Structure formats: structure tokens, C-alpha cells
Image (cartoon, rainbow, N blue to C red; front, top):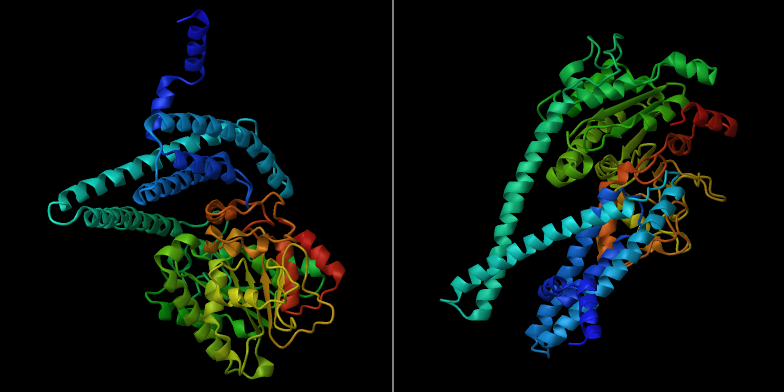
Length: 561
């Protein structure tokens, strides 16, 4: 061999060593191609800014999804007995595909920093640092390797089962049954061991956390305060951590009066924790009894608030209505779970609905028996899972003869049937992220900008407002994004949605699913984190508070997050 040939051979070995060719030879070429494309697409922005850890997990899962789809397509090609390349051609194609994959990965990792910084700038966050693409690349590789190991373990189990079944049944039938049996084994491990154990552990952990006192709040002494020595609901166990937080953060009459300049009342806040009574019905009755004890029905405004999964009622959502009405407000909430909303939705989805329905039935049933001119205006409120359960509990057909006054539902989850029906029936010229429903006399939508004053539209006797951000993945997640571009991605887009967001089959659905998990990590006023100033506009419209523009702006400054 000449010197030049030897140098060329060594150069090729340095650039692409033999071990790399051997590794590539074990991989599926269609899988490698699709995995690379899915990885590149996963780096594009979606609704929520991502940390390197979150982006790495997402990209690793996208790699695995793309590779799995490619392997399936290759198997289908082989099953149909279509022509396949020989070993030499396969190795050549593997080297070309591998080289192209490396180039694409490097280019898109470099681009990922700019994409993330663009969405961070949109949401007024600090940019990522220069190490962002390196860290996410390493995490993605680890997640993909783990996913590939699990997939190969599944394949080994399929082959093991099929090989033993072939003694009794035909080969292809044994393969099918082997796949079904292996899937059953994996599902039994996931559902019976990982999920059940994980949910049970999470429930115990959150239950223990709920009995801890919330820092910075003290047990109230006033007779007409829930959790006081005179209350039907004890401070330590009856309220729980979230109840102590909700009751303890209520403003007093003096604070409200200092702001409004008018005489004010101490707002009433009633909360019934999960440990206050044994059953849902007992907790609902206890809530009504406590409301009667503190004269809640003597107030001008009564708010029935449905908590999120872990029992949290956002005080930023309740304070505005208390200030707008000079403290002449009573708010009641009943806890139904210790778990975060997404876990509660998985583990005990009906429990929240049944609690909300029982509480609404108990309180609405008492309220409608009162003389119409001597009872408070009744409003419903819920955030996230609380909005879903509140919406389900108040069947409009059951209250149409004597309707409540209105509702404010913030961040309604995509599973909300009423919300989806309204979206489908919106006016054709209104975008999916800010729909207009019929003549806007009953239902209106708003976001960071106040869109509730609609020229030519008059409110009816019941006012329902949906507060939703276009960047809220809990609201705008769609399982159909797997194969269909969501309507809210069409132009014009919401003001807080990146223009770089692009729909890709499979990948966009994965991105949105991850966004749902990190929606609460967005800055206030974006994603699934709703700001006080936007609640002020919504409550002002729902309750017809009658404040002028200057008062509203001053209240926004006073209650600034």
C-alpha cells in the first residue's frame, strides 16, 4: 500500500473509527433518521421556557419516539418482504446517516439557545447560559440510552415468550401473543408497582405535609373567624396547611379601608380541610354550618371557591373581589385532596367533582330558599382543576330557574367539556385563544389584556368569565396534536406565544405534555400562573363592582404581585 493510501486510511479511521461503524451497524437506519429529526424538532420552542433538565428529558424522549417509529417502519418493510440492502450497502448507509445525524444535532443544539432565549425574552426572563446545549445534550443521550435499554428488554421478553409458544402454535401467532403477553407484564409492573407505589407514597407524603402549620400565619382569635377557638373547624386538623394559609392571609377591614377610603368589613373566609370530617357530605354540611355561624349569608357577595388538587385557593384571586367590595364578601372552600392537580386527576378524578357537587348543592340549596332581595350575590370561582370541578358541579340546567350571579374560571383544563363546547361554537372570526361566544351576554373570555368590555354587547343576569392565557398548556394541550395542528397555533397567535413555535407530528404533542408538567414554573402572568391584576379586571366585570378606571389601576398597583 502506498504512503498516500495509508494516510487516507488512517485519516478515515480518525474521522470515523471502526467501532463507530460497528455501533451504527447495530442500529436501525430509519430509526436513526427519524430519531434525529424528532430530536431537532424537540429543541424548537413551545409554550413554556424550559430548563436544561426539562429540555434534555423532552429531547431524550423525542429521540426514543422517533427511533421507535423508525424501527417499526423497518419491521413493516421487512414483514411485507420488500427488497432490503445488503450488509455492505447497509453499513455505507449507516455511516452516511450517522454523519448526517451528528451534523444536524450540532446545528440544532446551537440553535436551541437562541430559541429558548426568544421565548424567555417574551416572558421577561433571564437568558440561558452558554452551557445550556451541552447539558441538555448529555441528559438527552442518557434518557435515550435508558429508553433504548427498556425497549430492548421488551424485545428480549417477546422473543423468549414467542420461542416457548412456538412448540404449540404457529410462528407468527406465537409472535403476536408474545407481544401481548410482554405488554401485559410491562403494564403490570408499571401500574401495579411503579404507579400504585408512587401514588401511595405521594399521598402519604402530601398528607403528612398538609398537617404542618403554614409558616407566618397565626390562629385567629376573633369569634367570627374560621379556625378560631369558637369555630366549628379546628385550626390544626380541621383546616390543614392550605386552610391555614387561605384563612390567615385574609386582609382585615382596616387594610381595605386604608386603600378605599370608605368604611370596610373584615372579609369572611371559610375553609373545611380534608380531616375536618369523614365523608364528602359531612364536610359539605360542615361548611354550611360554619357559614351560618359567621353570618356569611348576610354579606353582599358570596364566593364558592373550588380549590386545586392539593387544596390550594390562590389568595391573589380572592383578594381583588374583597377589595372591590370593601370586604363585604364571604368566601367558602372545601378541600378534596392532598395531591397536586395532575396527580389528583390521575388518582381520584371523580373525588374532586363529587366534593364540588356536594358543596354546591348544599350551599346553593340554602341560598335559593332565601328571599331574593335579602340574599347575597352568589359567584363561583376555580383555578385549574378547581375550575373544572366547579364548572362540572354547577349544571346550568339545574339552576336555570333561579341562577347564581356568575362565575370566574381561570386556566380551565383542556378536559373541560363546557369550555370545549364553547370553543367549538365560537364566532368564526375570533381566535381559539380568545373566543367570542354568541352575543357575549353570558360568557366572555379575557387574558393579559382586558377584553371584557365588548362594544355593542350587554351582560345578561348571569356573567361567566374565563381567564386564560394563550401560553397556558393546561388549557391548550390537545392529545390530537399528535397528528393534527391545533387551531390556537394558527395566525393570529396569542401575544405570549412564540412566533417560532412550529407544529410537528408527535413531537409537538410531547412538547405540550411536558409544558403541562411545568406550567406552574412560568413567570407570573404567563403559562398557568395567573396574575392579580388580571383577576381584578375579571372580578370587576363578573361582579359589576362599579369602580372607575383610576380606582382599578390604583388597586392593581396596591396588590401588585
